[in-house]
Image (cartoon, rainbow, N blue to C red; front, side, top):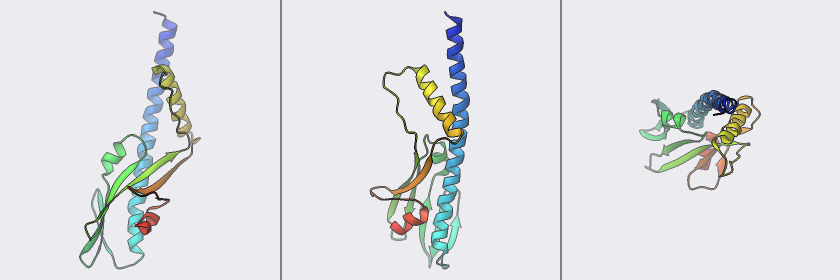
Length: 163
């Protein structure tokens, strides 16, 4: 057993674990902020009219007008803990229609690994990606997409208008 090689492998794994933990924390914070924006955008869309009343729970926001409701439903905990940046939710109309939507997190550094790459090289590449993300070197945006539709929108209000 080569101790120098063993130490290098341990260093790579330690650095990977450290940056992955920081990356996951920041990813979850970004998703929480975007979920907050989704709820705010939904509320603002109906608030402009001035006639809607709102009810809110942990996972839903309901816009009511004359005993008819439009519901935004997002499982906050499931979405926050899910890998990646995508957020999924539902909009239920008073006519009992259900629209599934995805708020897709799009990064400018989506790189795939070669299929033959070993674990050490994969950890090195992912650590580099984590560092770039944490330092703000990678571009990141969200797009709102109704499942089954080709269109994407920049905000919740735009998506609501598209429905």
